[in-house]
Length: 196
Image: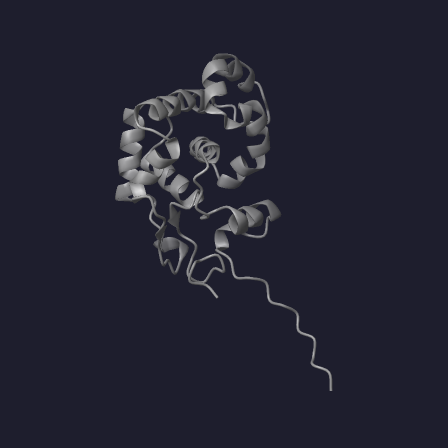
């Protein structure tokens, strides 16, 4: 007698990504995955600052246009051409047209170059706030996730001291989650390291 066909159950995910395909792909493939790529880290630090007061999906939907407008988040090119880029970007409907947020990307590019000159690689500097290794939390609900931590407060304080903008402690914590410095997938989620 043949085995009855069973439909595979979809994986259990963190509920914040809903069922939007873009959001689901971001959750499954990027969020919480440790990244040490300098350009990616710089991009995510800038994009998290763009989110302030908005939902992340709003920024995610505009991400490709941000990459086009802001030189693929190449810090050296942004620092060099920044003023002209800001003048054009403020009129571009494909990005969030907030003068302070747009200017912050160029400000952060120049600050990132200073970090590289004064401290060393941007990735090593940013990862130093978690001791160089991912922090894996065991959250059972979204409510259990903190908005900020002592590590994100320390990162925010130091980034501001070095001239970065739109890098408050909550923004820094969201950045840490995004680039895998912190893994805040719920324990029930298939992307949590203890799943399966």
